[in-house]
Length: 425
Image 1 (cartoon, rainbow, N blue to C red):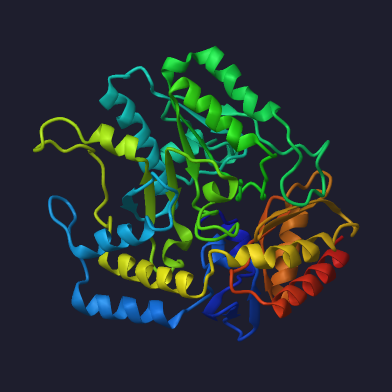
Image 2 (tube, rainbow, N blue to C red; image 1 turned 90 degrees about the vertical axis):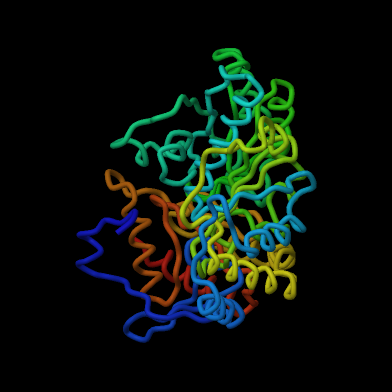
């Protein structure tokens, strides 16, 4: 099983059998409130009828079509719909099958862009400590979680920015921490060290999700953009988690008002009904690659299932729901109540930090001495037994509920979280 202590799990399995709206049901028939949108991905709630019907109809009409040297209409239709919501100037879409594939594709776009320009020395990629960019070799190389690459190593030329989690100054911060320029200025140090002419791209999550909802300080992303622009370095946002309404805008770049050159998506793209990812590239990147003889393949990359008919059908139906129910802006409406709920838990035993932005939040617990991660695991199992699905990373509880949550769901989250936190040893 992925990212699972398999032997421990099999001794006491937690098995989900069905889902609807804000809830799962396990194999024993217990109703479980989903406070994590599955894995940051079921943004519109579970088992939406429109998506089910679209997948069923498409499977009867066209189950698969190759997209190498031919195609079918749905990827073009879906891309056109998506770019109605993407930031201005990021109007070109390449479909993948997951967030990991989206990241590796984005890194390839960056390297191919500089190669097409004749800047063949630009092969170094800059990630960030505590960053998570999937599990492909590109993603674990630029990622900043050592456990994800300890047994595998790096296959790319990489370096890393420092992370932005400043708990000496910014514990229990609501929203963006006050401006702190140092983490972004570290990019200038790396440029001095390596030389701007060697660096192809910087990749960051606008909000680091998997490492425990790490919020960037005010002005941080803007400063990264300024430095990258000054040195001809591409800026890539990994929006696999923050995309599709998590912060109250379609994409985090719009929330922060910072325009990347490339950004990645997946998860909420189809409301997780069918695996799919998408990479958005700027007009400049696209036009640079569209050079040379017309019979030449411009980008030697792709997947068998890129633009899969069923995935496109699911994505189009999900986008219909997002638009009709105004879900891209709903997080902004619900975020204040979500913030109050989560910060009401400050002061409980073992709670050492709380962080939030939009409909993302983290409750960091004090580790048990000599047993890192055990208190977090205890919280996970206690919450599940009490009818609440949370995510833990080490000793940090991460919350990212579906965008369709209502006040009664917030009340249930608060009651259950308070109960389990008060019971933890």
